[in-house]
Structures are given as C-alpha cells and as structure tokens.
Amino acid sequence: MYEYMKALYLRFFREPDCAELRQEIREARQELRARLGREDKRTLLRLTDGLSLLREETALESFAAGFQLAWGMARELEERGLYSFDQEESERIRYNKFRKLKSK
Image (cartoon, rainbow, N blue to C red; front, side, top):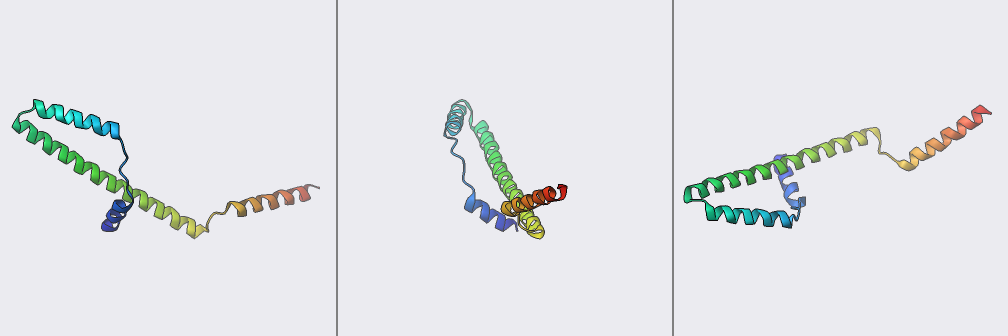
C-alpha cells in the first residue's frame, strides 16, 4: 500500500510557492558557504540533506494518513447510507407538520 500512497502523493501533491522563504534560504545558504571551511560545509550539506529527506518522508506519511482517514470516513458513510441534505430537510418538514397536527 505504501507504493500506492507514494504514487498518489507524487501525482497530486503540489509544492507551495513560498518564493520569499525560498529566497531567504538561498541567501542564508550562500552566506554560510562563504563563511564555512571545507569540513563544515560537508557537515552542513549532510545536515540539510537529512532534513530534506525527513521533510519528504513526513509529507508522504502525512498524505498517506490523510488519505486513509478519508477512505475510512467514506466507508463509514457508505455503511450508514450517504448523507443527503434534501432528504434530511424533507424529514424535518414532515416531522414539524406531524407535530403541528398532533398538537391540535
């Protein structure tokens, strides 16, 4: 099932724009690059790669959890019968008419 969730995620997930935030990150990265030595750059690269992977896995797990929740809700609604506002409104009107007739 994980592969299906991954395929759905890749098909439907759209990365938010966040242009300003992306620019701030680029500028901070460039500033750090200029200040850090070779070993520190490698450490920073490993850190940012790890954070990116963690973010991707978290997003995929969140998508899968949301999909499973929605699927469960859909199954529960189907078991109970699909909700219809029109049907509920008709029943409410009939009930109110019945109450009025009964009270007379």
